[in-house]
Length: 268
Image 1 (cartoon, rainbow, N blue to C red):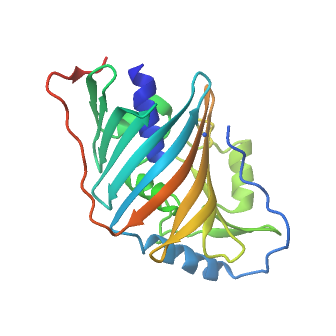
Image 2 (cartoon, rainbow, N blue to C red):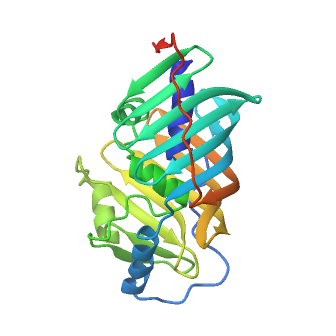
């Protein structure tokens, strides 16, 4: 039970059988220079709110579980994130994530998980950082680095920015499955200014993560996700996460609520 509950808390804060990123439809996009698209990407990741809050309705499904629950999320950028999960209107999980730690209070079993962020990879095979959590909440391109070189992959109905050239990706798929190789693809909307989705592919362990930002809302000048679907496809599990934001706030004072009740022992 604690593995499942802890997993829900961790995966919600990160990032699912959601549909794959579509190949686009409708009117073809006009050609844009790669430098123009990269400038837009750079501007996205360098302008983020100082704080964030939202209630988020969530659906979680994997090969053994299927559950819906509610969340209250408070985030202080570059610092910490607090998530309170309720099921049937009853708080069941209170989680606090920082740059280097993960703490999860399981109210049902009256126990606590204390771990570093390696817990995520060890239990779910996905290596995400606190920065990635922020990027997901804000609808930003995951793990995008303004100091690295990226390439445009030409497609008729959408803009695609990739960490690798198209031919290099084909070689990786066929035979060059280096241990540290991870391929990132960023899918931009028809304006070329917002990220609609991200695909992260690790050939070595055959794990793929798809994040779809299905819709957005403008909150005090910030383009915040409204509906998000995420899929994590692994050799032994497929994980689905769907999130619907409700009345999000940015740049408002936020207080984190996390207490380990007296008498709680480490979860087994």
